[in-house]
Every structure is written in structure tokens, then in C-alpha cells.
Amino acid sequence: MWQMPTSMVAATPVWIVVVLVVAAGVGALGFYAGYEYRGSPAAQTATVENDTLSILGAGTLTSFFPTLASDLAGEVPGITAPAAAQTYEGSLDVTSAITSLAARTDVAAVADLRLVPSLLEPTYASYEVVFASTPEVLVYNASIPQFHGINSTNWGAVLVNAITTPGVAKFAVWNASTDPNGYNEIFDMMLQGMLYGGGNASVYSHFYEGTPGGYATPDPATTLIEHESQAATLLRTNVTSALITYRSYAIANGLSYVPLDPIVGLAANDSTALADYAKLTTEIISSGTLTPVHPAPVLFAATVPLNAPNPELGAEFLHLLVSPQGSAVLAAGGAFTPIFPAWSDHPSDAPAILQPDLVALPAWASSFVA
Image 1 (cartoon, helix red, strand yellow):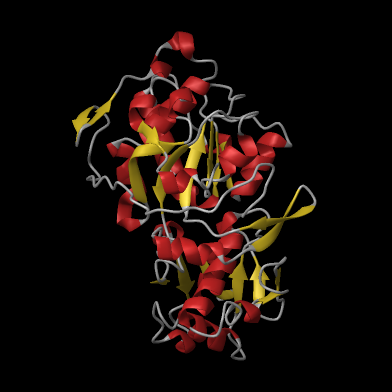
Image 2 (cartoon, one colour):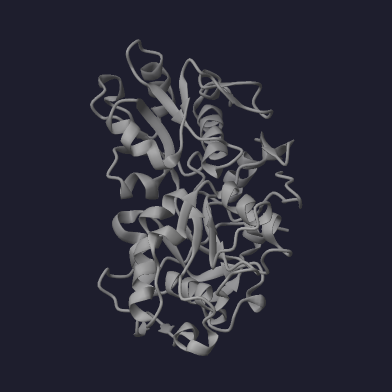
């Protein structure tokens, strides 16, 4: 299991996500499907310390959070949410900015539910809000003949064949030590090999050097290390030919993709999936030390850091995020599956405006952050 500054324990039971289906035109006020949008504490000028909403978020959220930030600014007089106050990057970069660089932000959002409890609590945060899920998918350049006929079962073999064909651009990978998608794509490859033949190294070994379970070094012959912010452009310009990323990123950028088996794509949480996840590990560099990481279902989480310039405004943003209005933005095109009520490791520590939106983490999820 991943042993960052605090340990994380393998999960058990069944993943049950409460999906709130909403229409894009749902407004922010009133009642919808049992949800009450409560008045904004940020609208009370006495509680506002800073009129600018600041956000540090996981890279794929750059297609979703600015919309909600703008919505909030339009609903609360005197509040602004400029792009200059929002930064979207690898989730481990987000936590490092807060813990190592003393960054101050009203909202911090990450792509792994383990990061806030293990890296920010209790010194930099007191609770997390798990607000959505999205699986991993294989994104590819559909104009490349070698990808014709690719599907959820054969994608591993097709990908290897395509990338090793002369003239086909390399496979794009993320830095696993700064971005959860970097270690998730390693696990996707291992799981594909494990479930569809050849062992967990059958796909992995074509793209990474190093024994599975240890530190994975991308193979320069087949891979190109890139940032999520550049991935869509590089794919369209044939600098890279394929990549593994979140469904939310693929949909937001209009990219061709293949959905993966639910276990392979880190979307499943039944006992079979959890047993398969427990068999695998990789290593990342954390504080200069090799640190083990195990697979976990992809769940996005957010918090208001304890040093937030305007914690009331941050809490109001999270309240909007899990509302029908926020769920509609996240769910557009099938990008995310919103979770409502949202899950929290410490719901009683959340601000009053958020507590009615939260329930305790399910047992299987809480075991990941114990």
C-alpha cells in the first residue's frame, strides 16, 4: 500500500456511487432532487477576507472548475474568479505547493482521494470532499491505421503493435511522482496484462524499464513524458499517437478513446477488483525517497486548506461544486460521475454550509485513507 507520510490500507467491500442526474440548465437556487441550495456566507461582506477566489487543482479540472468559479463570481456580489488566480497541474504538485512552497489557496482539488488525508491533514487541512469519479481510458489518434479495430479487450496488444511500428509516434506518459495519472496508467497496463493474458508485465514491459512493482522508468524508445495540459495538442499534431488519461479529459477535449475494462480502468470496487488491486504496486519519488503506491479507484477530492485566504469563499465553491448546478458541469458529456451527497473523511469538521452536503466515506473508501 502507498506509504506517503501516513499509511494507506487496501480497501474491501463494494463501491456504490450515488449518481445525481441533472440537466445542464438547472439553476443554483431552490430545491432539486432533494437538494437545497443554501445561502452564501461569502455574500455577507463581513466574512469575506479576500474578494478573489483562488484555486489549485488537478489538471483535468481546468475544463470544469473555471466555469463553476465564474458562476460563483456571478452569483456573489463583489467576488472575482480570474484565470490568474487558478492553477491546474499534477495533483502531487498541488499538495507540494501547499506543504513545501507555502502556497495559499481557497480550494485545493486532487485526482486521488488519498492525497488530502495523507499529505495535507491535519497540518494543512481538516477534511476532504470526495465529489466525483471518472475512469481511465485509452486515447488514440484514430487516423493511424494500426489502431483500427481497437476495443476494450484488445487495446493492450493493439497499442504495443502500433507503437512498435516504424513511423508511428510515441506513447505519451505522465510523471508518476507528480501526477496520479502517471501511476494510474502504469497500473492500467499491469491490470490489462494480468486480466487478458501475458502476466502484468506483458503490456507494461513495452513502455517502462524496471521490474513491475519497483520504480518504473519510461522507455525512451516507445514513450514521451508530457504534461496533461499539452496532451490533446500533441495527439492532434501527431507528436504522440496515444495516451492513457481520465475519461473527463478525453471528453472535454473531444478525443477518440476506448473505455477500459472497469477493473483495468480503476473504476470497479467489488471484491474481485479490490483483490486484483492489492496484488500490484509501483514506486514514486516522494521527498527524495522511493515510496510504494498501490492501485485505487479514481476518485476526485477537494478541500479548503487551513491557510486559505478566504475559507468561507472556498467552502461556498465546494458547496456549489456538489450542487445540481455543479454536478451538471461535471457530468456534461459523461465526463465525470458526480457523487451526492459527497463523501468526507471528517464531515463534522467541514464548515456549516457544507455539512448537509456530506456523508461519511463508505467503509471500502475509508479503509484507503485510514
